[in-house]
Length: 178
Image (cartoon, rainbow, N blue to C red; front, top):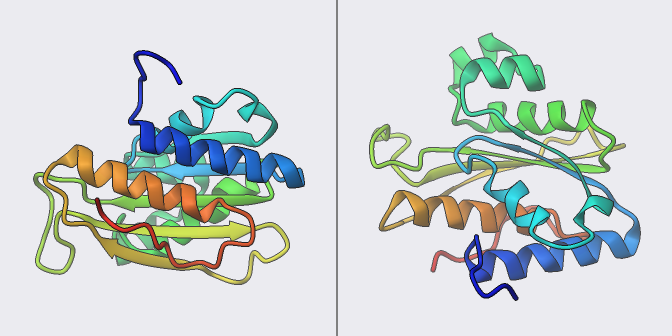
């Protein structure tokens, strides 16, 4: 472990598990991130040898980036919102289509401290997972993290996204909020 780690140790340890498990089966991954701002990709690239696993990462923070980089339809975002299962699924599908990965995970949410609503409060984060050969099976779920800060919500979201990249992992993020 580095003496001065760039990222929280629990995130790096989880990323190491993801890289090792995927490398063992020769599986490549892609990530499409919004509220985590590249934190998932940063955690994966913190691990030596991650280039054998991480094909690419997209940080699509704006709606325009989701449309331009991942092919998410602007009318889908207008209808359901940027923070929705429909948008997260389209992000995961776009990352899979535009990469050589076997599996892609997308994350979009409201990290706060502003931007929340009654229907989608601060801490509301949506995840989606798309696997090559199963593109017609949408997988998506939302979680509400009770974070004490923007950083805490982003960390919890990144941990959940990493969990979804574990091989043979059933869809349902199970990482509990710290």
